[in-house]
Image (cartoon, rainbow, N blue to C red):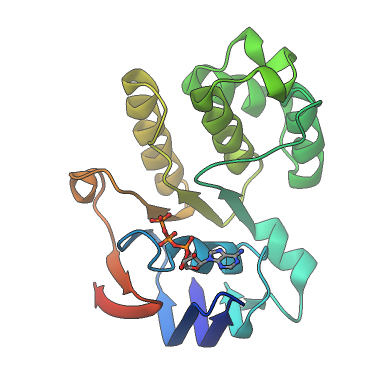
Amino acid sequence: MLEIQHFKKTYPTGFHMEIDSLHLSKGIHLIKGENGSGKSTLLKSIAGIHAFEGEIKLDGISLKKDPIPFRKLVNYSEAEPLFPEFLSLDELIAFVAKTKGADNSQITSLKEILGIGDFSKNAISTYSSGMLKKAGLILAFLGKPNLIILDEPYTTIDVGSQKRLTELINQQLQQGTSFLLTSHIADFEGFFAYDSVLTIAEGKLIQNHE
Ligand SMILES: Nc1ncnc2c1ncn2[C@@H]1O[C@H](COP(=O)(O)OP(=O)(O)OP(=O)(O)O)[C@@H](O)[C@H]1O
């Protein structure tokens, strides 16, 4: 599903990340690591947000050679999403749904599962941290992506929403979508039957348990 070759990323602050070779099969994968180890850097690179050296391919499509087809296959939810404050979530959903090919029935169903009520009509500037997280999550599920990347999906959402999110991820997995997740929740390894668990430390992949 996902292939990474000769990956390098350096920030001006001095942080350096390097992964020589990584291949992840179709399914669900967990990325673990301490604060500042490089998890979000890797996820943002795979999502096409950060420039990097090397090659990233999803189902044979290269992010560098075919950036638009690649981005159509990957959806991403940030750990701490930021959106233009003057827009409402409904406006954001309408925009992303058009680019990702999501229909109204999918939008209605996702809103119900994630517990997104009338607040989606209001400007983002009025949202609580949980509402903002739900905004990032719903956008990541729109359309039919091959890979959904969720950075810290469970932080700040309530317990009921956490349970429904777990069901949603399992449902999408059965329909053939792959997932790449990170979490600092202590028992997160027990949440899903992961196909692999990767550990990152100081910008290096130190373990890859199949
Ligand atoms: N835009 C940036 N510019 C410069 N340095 C950055 C930038 N983003 C991240 N870093 C640095 O890169 C390193 C890795 O950060 P990253 O956000 O990938 O870690 P993380 O594993 O996701 O951490 P956390 O668990 O705290 O979310 C850190 O040292 C951080 O300071």
